[in-house]
Image (tube, rainbow, N blue to C red; front, top):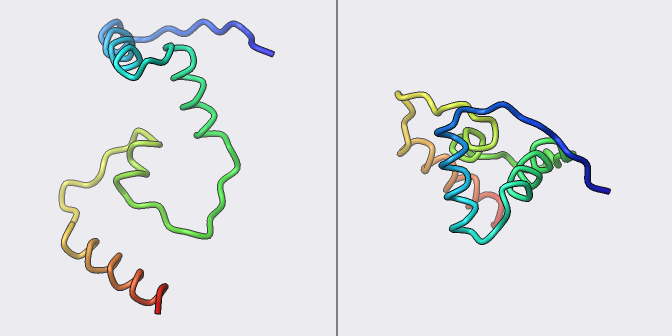
Length: 84
């Protein structure tokens, strides 16, 4: 069952979201519903989520001093161990 929800958001954010939704051929309501669903759905913690993906889902930014080469190396080593 769908219910109505009223939100107060910055006009610029709304306009960008409308444009994004339009480009993806999805309604703004469905876009927001999918996002909220992904945030609140029970998560399976069997795998580690990368800092970049975590920053997208939480809205928190990645620290500027992040060593991406080290992250890539760590992830490569993890995959090597996983698939041996």
